[in-house]
Image (cartoon, rainbow, N blue to C red; front, side, top):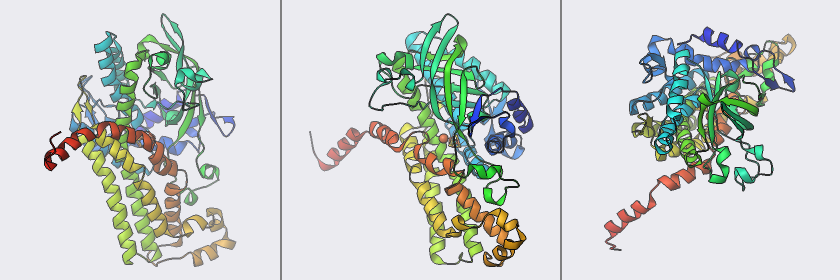
Length: 482
Ligand code: SF4
Ligand code: FE
């Protein structure tokens, strides 16, 4: 397995084509806006090297029998699925942000089982190709991004009916040695910190959309790939000299980028689906299911930090003994642990697929994510309620450092004697960071739309909910014969 510093050095070797704030980024690794997101992924290497966490952070590969980072593991049991969620909670607690590495893990497990089933039905050899590709990922301990969401254009139209055919990523040329693809993927979590990207179709496809039913992997610095960094609230604070207090979370963050594939060549051995449109729905459903499970871990870990910050703010405000504050903290814990419960439940109920890896219970994973579209908003509301208005009206760190204004800030922003004014400012900025600032991308709006928007889960809940069987139960109890 790689160490933290080997991981960072390996990223330096990539020749990424990244743009941010209108300019090409010369060295993403050293860029102060991007760097916190790199640190979050690096935590997955740090914790894997710590014997205290090896049970959660590492696993034994079914492909090689070697010890690997769990972020590259093909789940071999329900226990593996549970450990994945626990690992994500731990990572969320340590970074208070999106640590990005789960997307590739979820893509790998979805592709592993789907390629097996494509081969069984079609006589292709995608499964062997994928295993070969993933063996290298495990051995070299690489970070892999998973790319699913296309721009989609007019959402009432399928890919092949769009006025611009590139609004969904598709094959534009087939050669004896591979394919050429064109299109874009939105919201690519962590791609600038990734060595490879796995691309999957974004939804179920029909025969007319055959060229859009494509899955493959390429290195992130492949010719033709352009990455445009996604703006985050308060992102330029990271460019302010000496910025610390105002960042709320100085060391960690997440990122997303628009990813453009401008006639990118993919060699045959890296193609895992090409035209088998009947299986695109399966691949999407499984990837989404795994990623919806993931949210029952990562968001809970970040929630732990937010609840802790709210409780600290209450202490510093001298309000900790008020019964309504205590009750709000209880409510936050209740909501957070409810999220965790469904993350664990869909893992416990995981079943073996035909390929041999384990898939979460899809109904429970979708229930998990549906809860995630709601509860972090309520947790956020309660954190803001407890913190008080100063979390958004505090003077800047620079005013705090200026002796003329510092004495006033020091004197009038003083809370309880148990803390310094500076510590009170720090906790307020941390709450701001998670609820409104740079990390709010990962905790708030990503809770809504990441791993699929709420309606996508409701479609799956409708499909998996088995209302007919429930009607039969009711009929039997009520004595209805037909
Ligand atoms: Fe992982 Fe959560 Fe970020 Fe998705 S949102 S990549 S599950 S940390
Ligand atoms: Fe996500």
